[in-house]
Image (cartoon, rainbow over all chains, first blue to last red):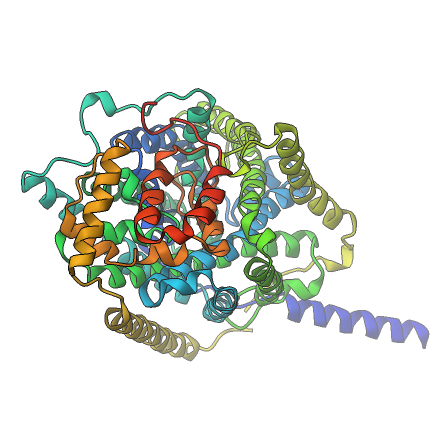
Length: 485
Length: 152
């Protein structure tokens, strides 16, 4: 009787596991939609005023990192995605080991933990600029905006990848491509009217001013402007022909990202002098100054809403990407409890998003109401970008190894000079990791050792200790065999 | 288990509904923004303050291509958003985040900035809301600077 009961119990558990592991049938998205998702996750006009400060040298500051970091990241991820579905966890799992595959996708996921509160605080301040600038300093308003918008985004994400792709593409057009084109056209009009550019545009200003280590910090940190190009590769199986379509998507995204970063920043630097780009009230002040020159201030609130739409579109892609990678490896290797592996009817990892939402809500409250948290929040972005660099280091090693260990694996796209590309990308990522330990302006004149300890400690806890603990305490029974519906 | 073909048709309709709702929300917020945005009005006081700001920028060696009428549209008589936010902790937290590299996504990371990034704004505070100058200076003096954008 006992044996019969055990058999029945085991069979019931298997049924439960199979039900949990059920995956709804894929809905295909086009390669152009994936390109727009990739572009909106990396680029927007948010950074244009920041780069406009450097005038013509902003081209150098964006092109050199593109050659050293954007090109290797994009080409390498294009080859990997055209050969293996599943994104970075799969590449690193196949190329190095499943455990390091989990570490890689965890590092990608960890980047987003502190990103949402800071992105949504920016969204709140941008909307405040339009409706009532004083609200930007109001804790209650900021907390409500961060929490409400995050959960609305989760609700939208739960409707499936096609909804996310549509919203992200729409956000990119409404909030980045069209407004970017408006800025560039107005900038050209400004110059053709015979006005002198606010920032010198001669050959003497092609290179940034050299200020030693500070300039190095600026140049190397700009590698991170292109962070996330590989993130949407996790959706490669949602393309009809992944091997052919993903490389097309990544090449289109590369071109769009470069255009979005370079030309609007240049246009702003032609019209608005660097010292008038007041950033306290958010980047909107720069756009306001730009439109004030042309007497078209009515464009300022429209731009504000457009920038918010672009930010939310980009946020949706980050909600859908790393969490899916975490889900996929957790299902195949049993790295997360079954509760977090559950999918909704649209195939979205809703429980991971809800758990992340709880963390985001707590962080939002701390950010909005505790001045010490908000004033030191920037340091979390340093720590999480450091953690992200671990993912890139693993990705480049995995790519080079896979060329050697699995040369016969069918790849829809083979990156030219893959190994040298991996070496350049690896060294660029390592440089960004090392330069992350140099204190920025925000740390003032405090001790370098204190900064090193904070960033190093954060990197250790978030990038190594937490994934180690998750691996250490996983249970074999958490592993799930997927059943496609 | 196979999925019924109807599911995709319904799903497509659902997506159209979702996009329509999103488009309506964005349009409504944009229209509300157009109506609620605080457009600065021309006045003698606004002209005087704009002239004062231009003079102060020149004294500081900050050459400006912005015309006086542009400054009137931007700052009016009360300094606009700069004075609304320059002394607030949360706004200063946003500035700390914005003093960063060229990333627009989660790759945003702080860098060492040029003093001119805050010098122009300090002048605006000085002219339009001098009562905030103490808070602004306390914030700005705690930052470390380097000549990364302009020759020293």
